[in-house]
Length: 124
Image (tube, rainbow, N blue to C red; front, side, top):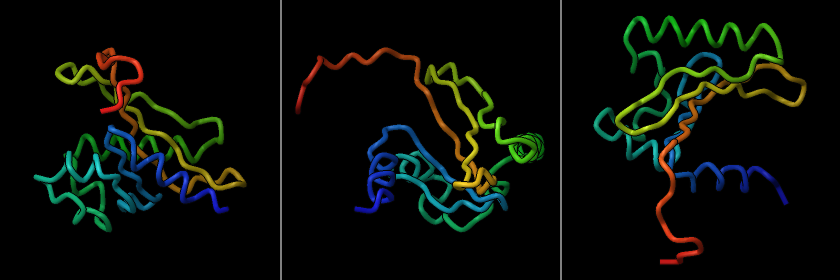
């Protein structure tokens, strides 16, 4: 069985927004949480557009710096990019690489610090 269907399902079931870009900064995939989160900015219509069109000049400069750093070494794979106090989460840019280690893109990962309050094994 092909693993890609499992990997896509992992991303699609994540509650955190996941936006995947290629090395040209083109948005190639948004999971359902990202489509919902960025609905006011176009939602799924953002797929195929440049991520750089969605950011100010300073952010674009930083995104380009990080992707250049990713390309320098296969050891360069994760950068802490922000903390959102309101949502109590950290943001990271994560390198995506093919099997030979070549940089093929990147995505933004959100890690929430707020402890889960749902009871264990609650199945509603």
